[in-house]
Length: 117
Image (cartoon, rainbow, N blue to C red; front, side):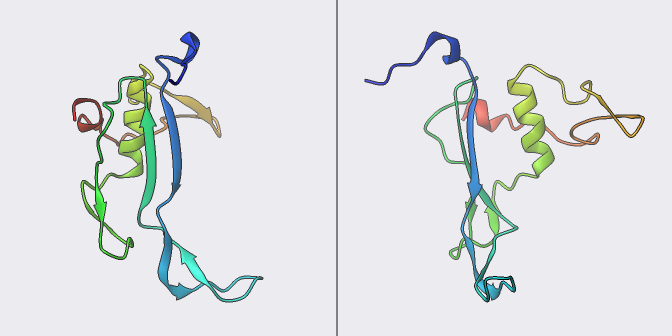
């Protein structure tokens, strides 16, 4: 049985990773040719903090190259994570180069499916 410390029981835990290496395309680098990193899809898992467990959201094509179902923009993901932390992404600001900025740049929508299934 997995023991969960009381201090992290309600914490939102996340792990992000590249979905796959791109199935084609030369990667010109100091190490020679090879497969490119995939810029069009990624994999992540989330647990706790209000996220409904046991669900898969989104799919890629058969090569794992392009997201084809339940696509999410990165600003939507950021808005969703901030919402799960109890923060409104449209009210949260920080100073950058002397100007107030928002982490989602006035865009992004909360992904309701993440908490309701």
